Figure (spheres, rainbow, N blue to C red):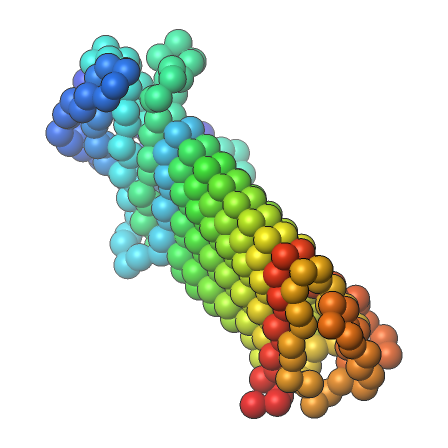
Length: 297
């Protein structure tokens, strides 16, 4: 197993590139001082390698870039100078080759308000797992299955080749140019899905939903929200049946040219595109539903 461990006063290397410690500073809050330090690590990259990052009380961003190895910037916040020195940033490949990036807190315990954020650039990654709390998550330009989980933070995924699973609370969800399917859940946040080639399954409350399928997507789509409107753009290849349902809102649409059957009233509509195929459902309360079709443009 290849591993790099970094603390403020010590470095241990095993098969990974050198790293550097940057400046340390102290910031005060109403609950006493927090000590902050930025640390930089480098880890070996190889084709087909996945990345897993786990932290608490911090944001994570992973992006593809023109670099030879994985470059990791960690911003650590601790409640004392001693705890800051004792905190370790670990980057190691497990037995499958997965690069695992994590924090080791003194005595294995993170104290209140302590946390660590990560900014990572990599030549690429096939498979990505990000896990945090009280922090946003962002990936760009990666491949393989993406699993992102946080709370009290937004999730953004751009230019991704692979299926996406995202879960947060009190945060917006944004997905752009996804070559795969999207499954996502949030509360108190809007959802935006633009140019996705696969199916879409999203759930939110207190937030609107905007979905624009790629010309290659055949569906299905499932949307469940409350206190928010839904806008859905489909294409001429959409299959199966689309059910639209709202309360305290209206339904508007331009009828797609490939619809074989349509029944509608103010709060409910059913569009059948093909005799066989999946069922799509868009449901909201206290919001309107708008359906537009690229085939009708």
